[in-house]
Length: 304
Ligand code: CP
Ligand code: NVA
Image (cartoon, rainbow, N blue to C red; front, side):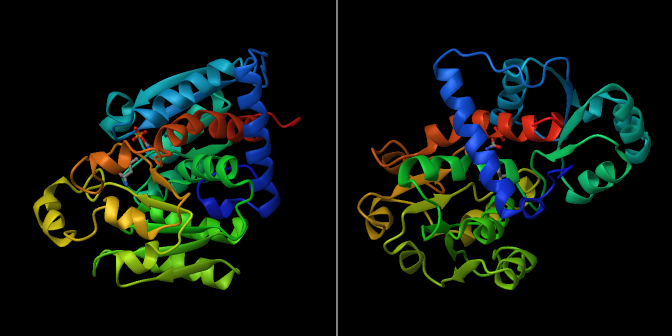
């Protein structure tokens, strides 16, 4: 594996390797055992959009692995003045050992990766958020021991995070139960990929049915970055899709609540749910660090 642009870039074995290394790096961090697997390496972090978790966890992750990270707001580089993606990719490849990219269009990342000679990691695009799903998988594994056979209910918008989760059913054996309002279904390509490759995704017309006996209920903002103009319409269309206590009660008694954050309390999730004992969201956010360190180490250190 050279790039991590989509969750589909991982074989079942690579998926497992990332989770195993992430768990090891997490233990080492808690035990204050240094783990400089990327000493002397530099990561470029290119962002077209805002970020709290992704930016900080990659930056801290590189530091803890003995490397260095450079934050690049794409508007402040010559990309913002029209230097092409291929030229930027060629030049950056001469300086740094890897790049992460958060973009509006997924194709910007694939184009950059095409011309780069370094590993490129998708840090969120309009189509996918694969690093998020690796952190979520680590969180679920910690809670339930094994991912195979878990039922994960996705309630709300069939967005980038949802697409990656659906496709991860192929490597993990998780069953993804999706319920979205009409017109906001996940990318049909994600569903097709899962169905064609032994994954399990079921689309329900009703959130309660999707949530029934689930091991986890996952939701995300109804208004993703770049959708601000359609906010009013979406807020109306998503009535009935809020993750509230009655919906959480449809899930298994020991179910956890997942949200990639940032949360819009009172919209897609209630305070009561996100602050409940069943909330896994803070562990999920922490696990971004451990999972991404494993991804970085495996991609940028060829000896591992
Ligand atoms: N979940 C996530 O990617 O958060 P940020 O947008 O803060 O990076
Ligand atoms: N779906 C959200 C995820 C943010 C981490 C977005 O794309 O804005």
